[in-house]
Image (cartoon, rainbow, N blue to C red; front, side, top):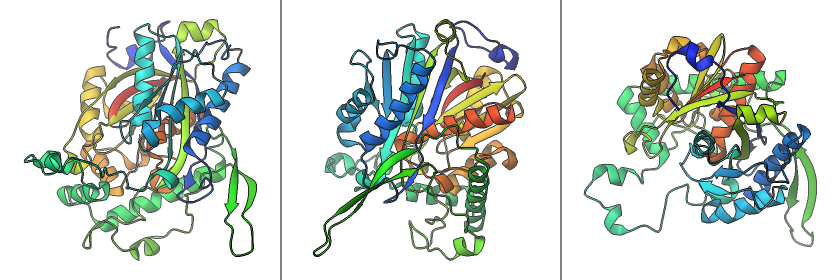
Length: 427
């Protein structure tokens, strides 16, 4: 398939387009919050079951094997999610003829699962597939995503960049802030805006289309003569939004990563639990089967950056379009490098984009990308980001896509991106 060049070409519909026909997610739970007594495979099964039901409601024979493959992004699940992820897919009602694999590209894992499924469709290997992601950081964040059983010889490699791969992400955030001159005051202001936008979007019901409410267990542990008590409740909304946040309350927080640092728990993404899932298909296949496209995948690109500034993660950049508008979303600092390359490849400029959906891993990293690319801050994260909503690592890419697609449909606009660049067009 030849690379499309220029906005007009990108927006032209073709039978071999790769389209989204569903894009859903669970609510995002706070660390030790509403999902604390659940397991990652339960969250994944829930969003996959909802996806199956949406597809079957449109007439797709899911149980007959219409979905040919599934890729699930996860960073922390035991054994890389390969066994428990397949367990979840079968529990959700997918047949054993639907393939399965787990994907780990750190914060961009579910975006990599999206790219893998899209490229399998593009090459003719499959016609329909699901790209998903999940993380339960309450259960699986014990080492804080830093490997502990590692060769002391490689750990002390003569290569500084190799050693930097083990640097905690909070320290990479501090390195970004120091290198690019991003102040604590700027980071706190950005964090406040994230909460304000997320609260406004939640109150207006803008997340409702993308979220699948979930009934969960809540366990009160045994204490003394009292037995453990399990009750059920339904979670319908993201738990991390703090409407009471002010600049004054943020300013009182102590540095979280180094004593003289600027990064705090308030201007960093939240440790979270959640799952996401997207269904992709060839346009001609989707239309023949009666499936309704809601967006279109166009292409992807990947760029690596120095480990010291969050370069462990290849970064993603995704765009979704309607004929009149476009947008982008990003992970890590990679977009500062990947976006210009992707724009050049597809013959676009930042002026073609109306919404930028940026993963707010840290306020420092977010501001670095915004300033380096010269973005209009009013176009960035219209419904808030991970500082307010949370960042369940393996699921975040899907969350970005769902938030973007439904915002584009609501506002009649288009687009998204993140680190590794993926170009998407809204229908």
